[in-house]
Image (tube, rainbow, N blue to C red; front, side, top):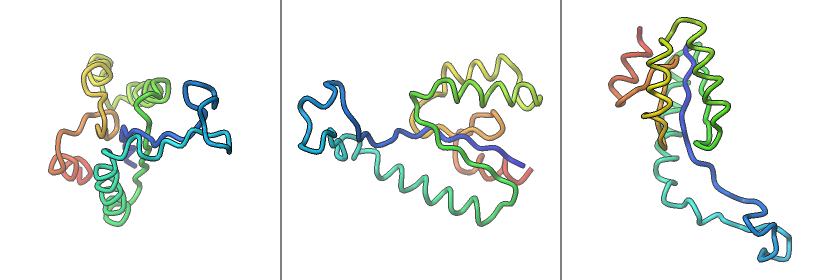
Length: 122
């Protein structure tokens, strides 16, 4: 079984920094347009997700917001414990590869789509 982690920013809908003082009458600050520039990348990740689920069995994909540092650390700790990735390599990934749309398979950073396919076939 492969465990894939994808770092993806979420759309913001909530109380905002002012606690809803400047919000709409419903009490929420609607920020649907805030991350609109990420929509095309989200669409491509959706295609990648569907193709992966159709072509490969035993794959678990987690989407994590880049602000969710605790969940990312838990992901790497799990794969260090399993022996999938050494501690120093996991720390290097956490420090240098945590960016929007970064993809990791069993704790290993994936640089491009061809490497993604190759790692899933092994």
